[in-house]
Amino acid sequence: MDNLKISEKAHVIMPYHIRLDNLQEELRGQDKIGTTLSGVGPCYGDKVQRNGIRIQDFVSSRFPKILKRVLEEKNKIFEIYEKETFDYEKLLEEYTEYSKALEPFVCDTVNYLQDSVKQNKKIICEGSQASLLDIDLGTYPYVTSTNSTIGGVLNGTGLNHKQLGEVYGVVKAYSSRDGEGPFLTEETEDEELENKIRELGHEYGSISKRPRRCGWLDLNALKYAVQINGITALAINHLDVVGKLKTIKLCVAYKYDGKVTNKFSSNPAYLAKCEPIYEEFEGNFEDVLESDAREDLCEQAQKYLERIEEVVGVPIKFIGIGEENENILFK
Image 1 (cartoon, one colour):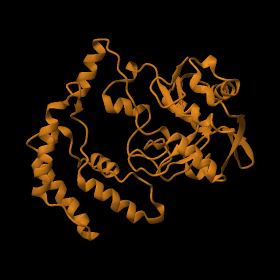
Image 2: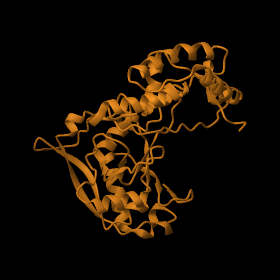
Image 3: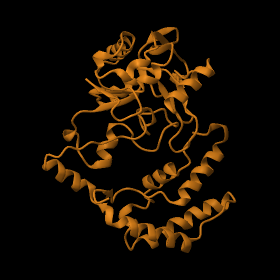
């Protein structure tokens, strides 16, 4: 683990964040967001309220004092809602041990990465979540608590826009969503088909373990992601999954107020008035695992991929055709 570097600027999710997450979802009732209940939102809430505990505080002598102040505030909230409070001494003892274990890996990652740039090292930044879950540009409030679009790379690393190179958009050959929120292309009419996609794609939340909602690829939404992220090429995963279906749908436009539009908006009120316009493609290309290059794919798979490129306007550079690392085709 010598190569592990933890940013000193990262914020620590504490047990009270997890309890607050559960409490907030409980209070939302029917309007719940569908969070993973892992404390992410409340932790980011403390961050923007300048009330968070950073790693640089966590591993310092300041930690006991900061924890005491923050915990007093959180316990008052739990008392109001008649929830169990946290014992300061017990929490301090437990998390002091964690801080000792993590301290050797704490690093000023901004300078570390900038030094790496000067040394002409290659840097890959992998984004979590998805563009429509971005706190600012996504389908608010059904979003995550941070910037999961390209801006998050800059804010999270300290790299600047001039240092960005290729931007790859990773997308499935179908669509899925974990939690609540707008999902125009969700397969709601054929439950058996949705379940088949879910099982073939192993579509269960990595943290929540909940069954994900599944449906068809929405090219209006994908174009939106391409625009706001400056995506230069796409990586299409799970081509083998849709290849096991008899017929595949692709959303190429919306019908809004009786008119055809290619406009996507993250405004849920707008999306509620939109109907997806589909084109259908022949599936049954289960032999994709036998392909060594994109040119080897069958005609129906080629047509599907070419239509995505045509509508979205960027090339597909990587194609995932199976579960193994080597099951990737490069263009």
